[in-house]
Image (cartoon, rainbow, N blue to C red; front, side, top):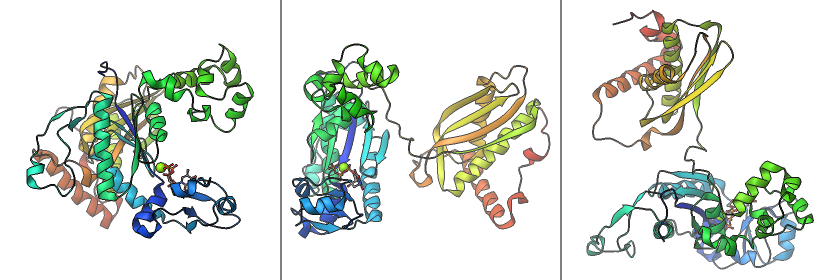
Length: 424
Ligand code: TTP
Ligand code: MG
């Protein structure tokens, strides 16, 4: 199957019985037994359980007393969050080797966009023990364009997780996030399911409406009462019925999902925080020099905050509110992530100059921010280090350490103190 240009190859990966699987890996004597992670007793709830315990009807979020009744022979463990978090980080690192467009959703779940990502389609290395001859296999590298190619990459991903972490994951491959998420759940555990638009009527429509994003415990009973139980029921419902039940906008959203349509992008930075600094001025700023100095001061603060956190940022944001209370926000993504005020202020200046129509009004509020944060250690080391950037980074480090010892005011850029000459 070849896909049209706009088709995407989206993966959703979800670890199987995650906490329980980690415990079983740590103590193989637990394998094959009904295992429940959670606290026993009247007020406890089940975090998760092994698939053996699920056969007895035990489920996540179930009161522990119910679980004890359903499966009295189960082994109980209280759970070790820091261990699970550590395993989760290692798995995300593995996923990150396949694509940078990776959106973690929870401790054991992530979306990946593989569209156009270059992958190796040569024969997979049979195992870690493969000798040099095996490793010399032909490499066939090309961009992923079809769902089948996505499946090949998904298989590699699952293999890597199984070999290095001794855990299984279920993966859904589809043209969008919603279908990928549904697909990853269809054949758990250790599943790998591709869900095409063509298969929506066969595989999506029989599922209960609760699988649609936006139908929660309050909406579901109302739809049930109107005779809508499956996603197919909802898609085929007479015009206007759903509008009356959930409102026009929600009805459109649900029907689109029901048809297998979902245009949301995989958002790598969704989870990560941003850093920003803004200031409101008692008198609107009109003098271009003053505005420029304000931009520099905000960029300085943001850059310092990044360096303090050992972070670099990929996207620079500018926020401007003019005297008439119109607010503009603009952003630009940098070719390389940075923690330098120089780079941040240059970008902010460009955004201000090119894209903020302040008209005859002055500037009432000015903010500079960054997002797309990552640890400085994760920044790709480029072969061509820009010497002026290296100098700036060294200077920034010195400034940071002097400020740390002598206080905030010890060093202030000359530019912030005096008005610069117009054409230096
Ligand atoms: P899930 O992915 O929902 O469950 P799971 O990985 O245990 O099982 P499945 O094979 O069905 O994916 O959640 C991931 C982890 O989050 C789970 O191992 C434990 C934790 N969790 C809770 O602590 N409470 C809950 O109610 C749920 C749903 C999960
Ligand atoms: Mg899971």
